[in-house]
Amino acid sequence: MCSVCQDLSESSIVTGANRPLDGITVVSLEHAIAAPFCTRQLADLGARVIKIERPGSGDFARSYDERVKGLASHFVWTNRSKESLTLDVKHADANAVLTRLLQSADVLVQNLAPGAAARLGLSFAALHESYPRLIVCDISGYGDSGPYRDKKAYDLLIQSESGFLSVTGTPDEPAKAGCSIADISAGMYAYSNILAALIQRGKTGKGSRVEVSMLETMAEWMSYPLYYAIDDAAPPQRTGAAHSTIYPYGPFTAGDGKVVMLGLQNEREWAVFCEKVLLRPELVADPRYASNMKRSIARAELKTLVEQAFAGLSAEQVVARLDAAGIACARVNDMHDLWQHEQLRARARWVEIESPAGPLPALLPPGLPDSVQPRMDAVPALGQHTRSILIELGYTPDEIAQLQAAHVV
Image (cartoon, rainbow, N blue to C red; front, side, top):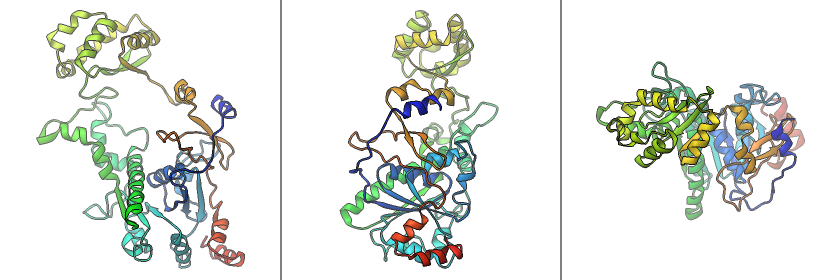
């Protein structure tokens, strides 16, 4: 057992009620990352999330890899605390199941292919009269209007369309983010705006539509480089792990060959850095480095100067000197380092959840009110809750058997 799991066996989490979304039911026609990430966070807050999956194969993210004891890493991350209902939504008999589900649902979330939900009769316009309190959240690549409305969209493609790749990477080559940043941005906006819609419903009694476009969420996140390039000005350049417009801000190599990340934000910090870290107080008054813009222009010579000062120090000694001076810095960790990060351990961020592959470590959701104990239930097996949900909806064992025989569920 890994050391993290060993620590988990000695910890516990209260699973009491009184979560903010207790009593809220979410039905989700979801796959991949954006919608599942949104609904998992709703589940964290207590919502009941019924995840509708294709019979036989399920959410295609289930087969992305087998790194988590045979389960897919993306799926484990975004699908705990949900109930899995297999349902072929294109089958003629599926509509009756969906109708019964929506009668008690508060939120419908979908990120199907462009236009698919509308063709199934699951648009907000089609549902609102029959389910006036239902909140419908549609997540798509580009939105339901405009010339791109019918284009399929995946995370990397949106990173590209949004300009993210143009400012990320090295001067020679762009690089995608190492995690699904476009999916995450869409999932976060869907999550927060569903919460806003629930608050609004509490005031008006009426449901509303939440439409989230991956391109629009990433365009919002790209607003700094957008404004930097306003009026046809030159956009930020790709600078690897360094900041494109602030300097010194980025990776520097110590004498032992290890890399330390550091960042300066203002002139006071520059002065402290020169005096207490570089031990070169005369640089404070050097006109070549008298402002951030000048330092950014002179970054090549400054990088040499900084690494010369670090040449006689190990990375740990550099970090100690930076910490003593109050200069922001970080070690360049990999995933193995993050599993063992002492800050996460000290703040008891790891708990244990169940899964079809057995107990797994999971991080507590960040930023919840201290009065809320998040829901941290199991990652579901494909179709694990199909029978129990259908019985709850009023189907008899014989009817369920008929649905199974017809491959509806």
